Length: 208
Image (cartoon, rainbow, N blue to C red; front, side, top):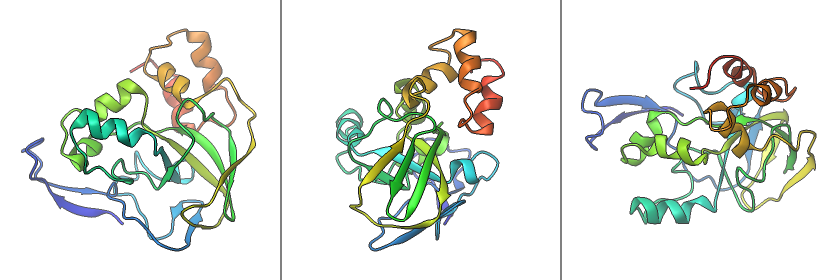
C-alpha cells in the first residue's frame, strides 16, 4: 500500500514528505493478481499509475547486478525499482507489446513500457536515476491481468502468444522518446491493438 515517506536524501529538499506506492516488500506464499493489480498493493498517484492497463509491473532480475555496480549500491535488492514481479530470463529486448503469458493461475498481457517518474530516484536516494533508466530504456513493462488468480515466487512465466513481434518494449521506448523518430513508425505503434490507451494518446502527440 502507499506509504508516507520522509526524505533524508537531500535530492529534493522542497518536498520532504511524499506519498508513494513504489516501496515493495518480498512476499512469501501465494499472491492474488486482480485486474487492478496484486491484492494488498496500491498506487498513490492514480492519475499516472495503476488501472487495468498498468495492473502489474515486471522488471528484469538481470538488470540488478549492473545497477549495483553503476550506482555503487551493492545493497539494491529485487523490488527496489518498484516492480511487483522480478523476472528471470526476460528483458525489455525480449518482450513485446501484446505478448501473453501464463503465470500460475493467471493470464497476463503486455500493455506498455514503464515510464519511471521522479519517485524512482527518491526511492533509491539517487539523483537522476529515473532519467538514466529512461535513457537506457530499462524501466520494465506493465501487464494487464486477463485472468485473475494466485501466483507464487519461483513459478515459470510461460509465453503463450506473440501477435506483434515488431514492438519490443525496448523499441517502444526508443519510439516514445524520439530515438526512433520516423512518424510512420510512431503511428504504427499507436495503432497496435494491444498498446495501452495512455500510450496510444502519447504516441499521437509530439515526442517528449
